[in-house]
Length: 213
Image 1 (tube, rainbow, N blue to C red):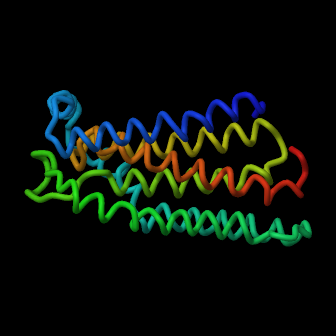
Image 2: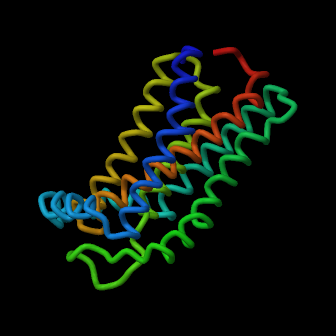
């Protein structure tokens, strides 16, 4: 990716995405007018079926985290075989960022105490969406640590596209099944994007010893 585009994306992740997260969280806590649009969108999108449930399951910890573990292990093996001085850094950091997800989500869920949609049993703690955040960090983190070892630009584009498709599939499944309001999912996108930006920036230096691809 050209340096200019990297700078733009980094600035977007640093400023715009956190600002959007703050606005959404404020609306949820204050029961603001944005929630009316959220409920309207949910009513139009919810249609529980088996397909949406299966898509939402891709955000389960039992599914997404093993994918990240396998990719992190592969990246560590490639880095060690290539003789990198800090071959362990990028895979380890990806796993640490993954571990930070519940540490951030649990207090937020308890503080916001947002009820679920009519499609789920009564309860609170639906904001932000844990499944979405898990998918963003697990699949996105897998792409971040894998990209330096992909030999062609086409392979790198396919890896990024695959990660995006998986995250969108989980997000669609959660909203379609009624497990989450749309804003729960959008807020999790924001949180996951910031974590991925931290991971990408921190691992870029450690991978500088690999092929400049």
